[in-house]
Image (cartoon, rainbow, N blue to C red; front, side):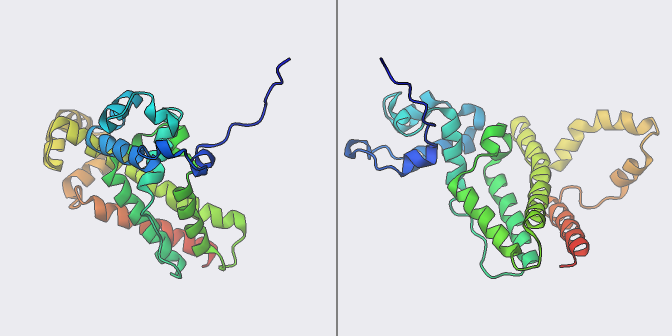
Length: 241
């Protein structure tokens, strides 16, 4: 009689750390991740399929499955790959570290717009390189007299601001790329009929004042850094750090 094996399946990262047979070394996790990221950067996340990946790698359709069990594993591998070069400077003041974390995350997400399109499971994946960044960020908050919950809340508050801001900025960039629009003026021109109707209703006087007087509508860097300053000011004031 067969004995049922209920041992939990090893995670992607545990499997990848196990040595592979010599004949499999020509197709490595690094090569798979690099190729998949190149496809996603050029064509978006929807272009990623296991068959397309095998074609680009020049291998048999089933070959990538020696390293990843499917697209969920592949997305985790891609996320870990793009975070490989992400480091926070050691021994910096907490506020400078949080600002660096936010700015470098923004830069990473704008270089890889597909990061904002990841499904929830991949977006929350605990990859080694993402865990390293989290460890560095939390270490920058250690020693300030905060308990563990407060430290994690500060880290998550900064990360939530970055993710929210970049979701909108990435969506705008993706839309402009899809439509072939080159700047904010073209975007506003396309949206003008809708916006004009809304403004003529007279229901949005404060928003109309923004449209008429704002001078930094297209300065996404300034908008991001200014909002970040407000977040960090609020944290510093509330926690007296």
